[in-house]
Structures are given as structure tokens and as C-alpha cells.
Length: 221
Ligand SMILES: Nc1nc2c(ncn2[C@@H]2O[C@H](COP(=O)(O)OP(=O)(O)O)[C@@H](O)[C@H]2O)c(=O)[nH]1
Ligand SMILES: [Mg+2]
Picture 1 (cartoon, rainbow, N blue to C red):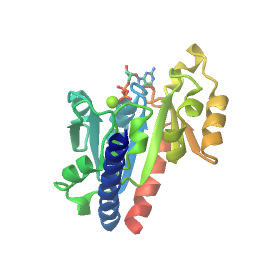
Picture 2 (cartoon, protein in one colour; picture 1 turned 90 degrees about the vertical axis):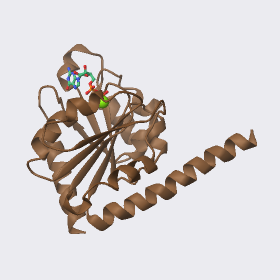
Picture 3 (spheres, protein in one colour; picture 1 turned 30 degrees about the vertical axis):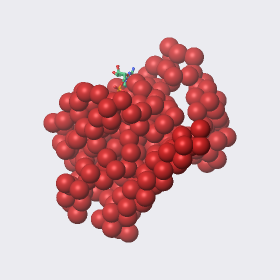
Picture 4 (cartoon, rainbow, N blue to C red; picture 1 turned 135 degrees about the vertical axis):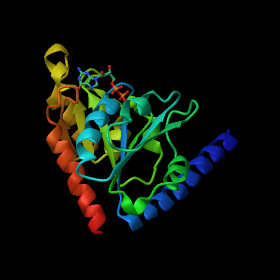
């Protein structure tokens, strides 16, 4: 039992050290890095498909897509105006900082403003692993249920922005937007929330502006 606990502590401590190095590197080069997290199927890749098409005209951006298996997300994201690199975690439920460190070693960071990391779809584990990102963003689709912020609080507590996605489906599902936001703000007071439908393209401007403003201030620093 004590061995198990020690191994877990070592893994988290190693990850923290790698994440700290990543954060310093991103800070030195003025790159704004988003760790995009959610349960599976909330619409992260769909959001990024549109985001790349719009934001790659405004900023120099790249995407890292993490999944347990396959290159399907990278296939969906490629050819839209930004380089996309897929990481397979080979069964692990989250991405770790050393994976990001290895990939960005081949990036020309001096010519990058925005890096978005699509984490593995999982509402629990990714929140425990710092990647060295500048900000964490959680996506919650209205098909998942408005109780998720209360039931899976860590990801919501650790994210500066909550995107409530698939709002085109709100007329068809029992999802109380106000209750979801109240629960998110109960675990994370003042959490910023946006509602959007990447499929329809509604509510996307506020997300683009959020990214652009933060990328600008990361570069200024
Ligand atoms: N109705 C609707 N469906 C969506 C929306 N965004 C994504 N989807 C669908 O939700 C499913 C999962 O989307 P995906 O982008 O792969 O989610 P991910 O697993 O979080 O990357 C797919 O069938 C998408 O077509 C949306 O805004 N509205
Ligand atoms: Mg995806």
C-alpha cells in the first residue's frame, strides 16, 4: 500500500517538475497555451475545427490532440490552417507534461502565439496533471447533464473558463444552464462561462476574442 502511494507521488512530482519547465519555456517565448479538457464527446474537436479556421488567420497557432488511440482527431483538425500533432497515450486517461515537452522541442516557439492542447476525454484524470499550460478550459456539453460541475468539481475548480457546448440541443435535453453555472461557481467562485454551439457557429466570437486577448497579453509579457 505504501509503495503504491509513493509511486503515485513520484509520478505527480515528476509531472510537476516537467510542467514547471514547460511553463517557463512558454513564458520565455510569449506563447499562450490552453489545456482544453472535458469528458469524452463534449465537442472539443468540433470546437477546434472551427477555431483553427478562424483563429489561424488572426494568430500563429498550433494544436496538440491527445487521445488514448487513433489519429482521428488530428485527421479532423488537419488542413484547416494550423499544424496539428496527435499524441496517443496508449491507454492512459490523461496527457502528461513530458509528452508536451517532447513535442514542443520541435516547434519554432518564437513564431507561435497560441497553442491549444486537446486533452484526453475524461472529466477526472486530466485535471490532476499540470501540462505547463497558461490557462485551463473545461467544455461541458448540455447532453452530459447539469450536475457534472458538482459531481466532478476538480476540473471546474482548476479551469478559468467554462464553455457550455452544443447549445443548439438545449430545446431537446433537460439541462438547466443556470443550475450548471451556479454549481460551477460554487466550486470556483467567479468562474467565467460562455455558451456556444460549435456545430451551428453560435456564441463563438466571445471564445475567439478570449483567445486573442490572452495571446496578445502573453506576447506582451
Ligand atoms: N448538436 C451538436 N453536436 C455537436 C456539437 N459539437 C460537437 N457535436 C457532436 O458531438 C459528438 C462529439 O464531438 P467531438 O467534437 O468529437 O467531441 P470530443 O470528443 O470532445 O472531441 C460528435 O458527434 C459531434 O458531431 C454541437 O455544437 N452541437
Ligand atoms: Mg476529440
